[in-house]
Amino acid sequence: MAGDRFLLIKPWSYRLWSDVEHVLGQLLIAEITNRIPVVFWPTHCLHNGFIHTNGFELYFEPVSNYSIFDLAKPEYTFFPPIWDSDNLLAEDVDKGTWMYRSIGDLITSDANVVVGDVYFSISEIIPFIKKDNAAYGMTAIEIYRYLFRKYIRVKRDILMEVQGFYQSWLKDWHPLLAVHVRREEDDMIIDERKEKADENYWGRNSRKYGDKNFKKRKRKYRFLGKGRMLKANTQYHAEIRKFVNKYAIRRIFLLTESEEVVEEYRKMYGDSVVYTDCKRITANEPAYNIENPVVKRRRGVEIIKDTYLAAQCDFFIGNDFSSLSRAVSRIKDWPEQNVKLLFRQRGKRKYPINVKMIAAREKSILRSFVEFMEKLCRRIKKKLHIGSDKIGN
Image (tube, rainbow, N blue to C red):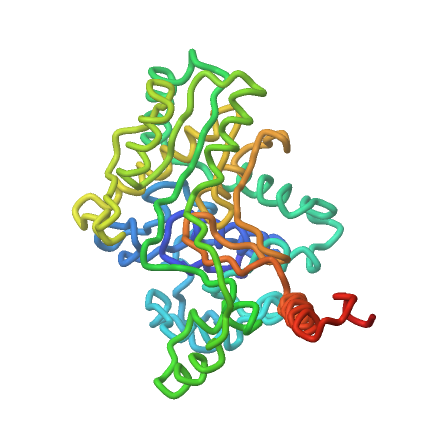
């Protein structure tokens, strides 16, 4: 790699495993562009509880021998053009506009320092991989695992905690099944009927709209038809039974931030359930209550500890919409049948399993209308004493 070409990888989501996933994508871009990667998570990151430190290096070893301070040189050029040597440590609050941030922009830039602070999945980057790259010809999951092995090295003190718990509570109980259950999102209900009425519903409802637009949507969804409520996280137990019956599971290692989930699994599986002693919250507590500014690194350690313990199990069931579950599935080369990431599928769409959902009736509007007309026709014929009750006779 050239000694004056760098890719500075800043945070995207400020959630630990989500940002690691973002880092992996940027590391692949660094390889493609022959740049030296430097990861910098500032002090306001979710799990960075210290002042003037690199949050990434609180948990992982550096990905290169350079720091952000080596990049802040007045003689260097920077891309996107908003950056310079004076503001490199700052945050761009407008990065969500994606200006100057397409994959093509990042790859073709000739600047000394390119800043990667927006998320690209590996699938988006694959078309740009050259034949001389080690990832050429790999699938997305194979590339994630390749990047994990090459770059993500957990700090020694965290690994010691992982091994200590494993030796004490898990080592002698194989086959082991790890299960990651995110708590139910009480403040979110997905209404499939609205999505069928409006193809853009999922994206539109992640934004804020004024009263005028809200009223328009309200009129549009006046006749939604009947639906049925699907509870959150209901698929887990059926999947757990399949693994237990097929592989004679002896212990279930549970990963969750929810006190209620721990209690539920203890009642259902008794002493077979094993879990770490970490900070958890109840259903009526907001998610930010899980954080304490004084012990933020401890929270990050607990998350990484659970993740790497799950990776030492033989089987894993997780949430397809969770970056933690995806991390577990990518840390090692799991046999395909040993991992199950759950989601709720309705038609061609995937939805998170840890939210309630109002499911539309399976019958289409056209079919319901035809059935209504058939019933009406039969009633009319009956009153008129017409022999056949079939439409068209």
